[in-house]
Image 1 (cartoon, rainbow, N blue to C red):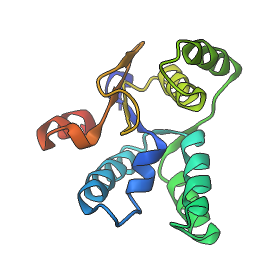
Image 2: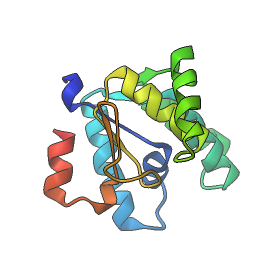
Image 3: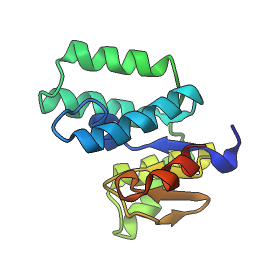
Image 4: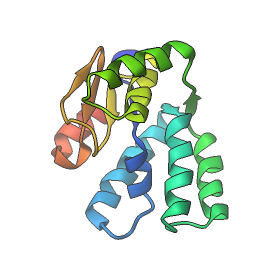
Length: 150
């Protein structure tokens, strides 16, 4: 895996992978997670923290189920934590008014770690941030998604 082809995911992609209410989105999210696991790709710990919080708060999963998902996921990815430079960068990005703080922190962490693509439904599709580009996988064709997952 090269830094120029690496990708990671926002929390919403993790949630769609377990949420059966939208089978089309679940299928795309599953495809992304399979690639994430097969490539042992980078994944911000923040996304897993938010996944646990959101799925238990919305009662999509029990705390035991959400905890098992997080533990299992950690076996197949390279977890990345934010560092103080990421926090400072996130504050700068947040000040622009374009992103919420925690979205900014996720983007700063992923960019510093060398990811070139951040899959997210909630952020601005196609928005570049340094060497990182946000992509909404639900707006991509199968061919476009395949190219980003390769």
